[in-house]
Every structure is written in C-alpha cells, then in structure tokens.
Length: 510
Image (cartoon, rainbow, N blue to C red):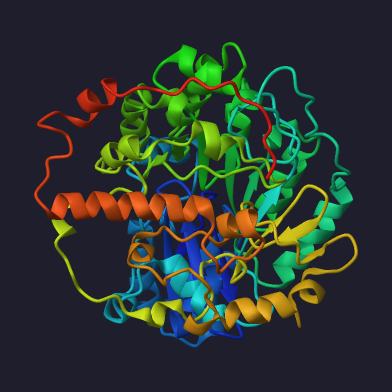
C-alpha cells in the first residue's frame, strides 16, 4: 500500500453529502469551486474530514473508499493542480506564494464546472450542479446573514428599513432587536445540519455588529465558504485578520472614481479614501475583491472612474442599473435617483453593466421557450435564504416575504410544509399575472423581490421591473432599426453631455 501523504490547504472548504453521493470543494483564493459525484465525492469527503492543514493519507483513503491507491494518487495530483490539495506541507511561505499567485485573478462570471458530466449536461456552474443534486424540501446550501441594518455610512439609495434620504430625517436603522451570539451559534449549527455549504454576511455594514468576528470564526471552523459584503469602513487596520479566514470574496461598495461624488452618496466624509485603502490592502493579501456600483443620477458621469478598480481587482460585473426601493415602502430612490430612459439607453450599451444589451445578438428573433416559467422564478428560497437581523427568514435580502423566524422555530420547521414555498417551487406559466404577458417582458431582468416590494405580489409586474424591461426593449428595437444611439460618440462622451437631475431627497411612501 502507498503511504504517500498529501495536505489539505487552509484556503479550501466544502461539503460532502453522503446520502446523495455528491460533494463540492471551494478554492477560496482562486474563487473556483468543483463538483464531484459518486466515488470521487466519497474521496473528497475524506479530504474534507482531514480538516484545514490536515494530512490526507492515500492508504487510509484507499481502505475507506475501497479504491486502489494508484487511482487515488492520480486524482490527488489533479487536485494539487487546482489548489485543492498540496503534495508538500503547508507553510506560511507556501500560503504567501499562493496568495500572490491568485492576486487579481479574474472573477469568473460563472464559476467553472470542472467535470465532463457537467459540460455534457449544459450545467453552467459547479455550485449550481451541487445545489441541484441535493435539492429537496429541506436542504439549504447557502444563506445570507443580514447581521444588522446599522452602518457607518448614510447612503442616499439604501433600501434597508430606517435609512434616511437627508440629514434632517431620523435614522431608524438601529430600531430592531438583533439576534444574540448564542442565537447565531444555534442557527449556524441548525443550518449546517441541513446542508449549509456557503454563507454571506452583510448589513447595513456587518462590522457594526458586536459579534461579527465570532460569527466569521464559527463559520470558518464549520468549513463554510464565507463571503462578506461591506463598505470597508469597519475594516481599517483589520484587513489581515479578515484575510486569515480566507473569505470567498469581499464585495465593497465604490460609487465613483471621484472621492467627492462617492462621499456625497455615502454622506460620510473621507469614506472613498478609506474604502479604497481597505480594498487595496485586501488585494495585496490576495483576498478576492468584488466591486459593487449601482448607477444613479448622482454618479452617472463619474462611474467610469470605478472601472480601473474593477480591472485591478479582477472583479466581475460591477455596475447595476436596477435600483431597489426601500423595503419599508419608500419610493424616493426610483422617483429621484433612477436613470431616465435616455440615460439608460446609453448605459445599457456598456458591457460592464449587469443588464447590458449584447449588440451582437440584437437581431436574434428566436422564439422564447416559456417552459422556463415553470418552477422557482429565481434562485431565492430554493437552496438559499436570508436571515434578517431580528431572525426573520426571507427568500433573499431584497425579497422581504417573511417565511418564519429562527427565534421561534428551527429552519426545518420554517421551510417544511410552508404554503408559500410550496407555491413558489411549483410555480407554472399559468400562475403569472401581468409578467410575461407583453413582448417587452422577455427583456426583463426579472426580480420577484422588486415585484413584491411594489405590489406585495411577486408574479405581477412591479413598476421597477417593468420600467427597465421597457427601456431595454425600446433600446433593442432602436438598434434593430439601425439607429446609432450614441450619434458616433463613445458611451462616456455621450454620458457627459446628458443632463443630471439634482432633486431634493426625502422619504416618499406609496
């Protein structure tokens, strides 16, 4: 028998589902994940059982899995090329070198599925393949923890309850009974028992919560892939501490290339400089960085200045034109900050915008297959849920349909025999109201949360969704007719000649 020894790096984590015979492994520095089935999954289970920095002995794995050592060694050597295993002991020098190797690596827009079976089946991501494989009425692969609605910044477009639009309004984001540390320990244990593989912590800003570091530490020890959404203001001087937990990614909000414009949006002097300094330091440490930059009236003419940072960090699509109104009913954002149709028609031609129009495909008149309307309308509440600061469980952070509360019930009690979830997962084409009854609907970046916020009905066309769909449709029709929307200018040149609305912002409830 071979006594060859391999080592599991500290930048890996994953989940093995013995019942379904599938596994997922995360390389947290390269931001790749890998899906395995049957015997390969069982071997991955042995790798995970070794723990971070643990030894993986070929002979022991061979006996447990009843696979010849030669095959295991070949498999392990492949894992070494992916950064999932190492054939040498992990030292601080090895870690530093691998961090540097992965630094600035492009974020895959769809994480690669490293499996021939996945390619043949048309599955676009290893993560989705794993989620689909373990899906049942109670399995939960991913969770978002909104730890708090409190924040150091006062962003004018914030959709969290209690956010203000101007300095004269009362900030009510702390008016909530937040979960305790013991609550989080219990909830995380419960979620792990139900299949949790990855988690995102956010807010507000998560580092305004008193127990954020303990929660990150607990998730790390549970082998959960952790992502962090933050403005970075609470991470000054703590970048190395966060890097030691190997976050899957840290998404930071950067609203402009102009410090003055960014600080105008956050209403926090010096916030641009502090956010950029944190992103730069995390980048130096090899932490994967994503940039989030929603486009609005205030930053339309300066968002191009964010692009160098997107390129530098290897971030994925950063610019989002879909602004979300406050979940407590305030319509200020869509009424005063949202881009006009003329502005949108230009911005939608920018390939860095999430909802951009692929000019090469504007003449594609292929009929739309309506079968996609059957089943869950989006990934929320399928294998993923959001836990709000007070323990309410919702489909996602932007879809505040309350399903239950983890203070009163465990996750299984909340999602089992839930009438809404049953309807959600068994949605058919006939259940839709106005949605997908118009031609422009097929150009919609459908968000049930936006529908629900507008109408308290997730399958009818909310105003925000329809607004963007109509502009995208109109823009595509203009392009098909041969119109030069930019009049021979670049996108940035055209944007610079547009007028910007400078409205007085205040709460406007529907």
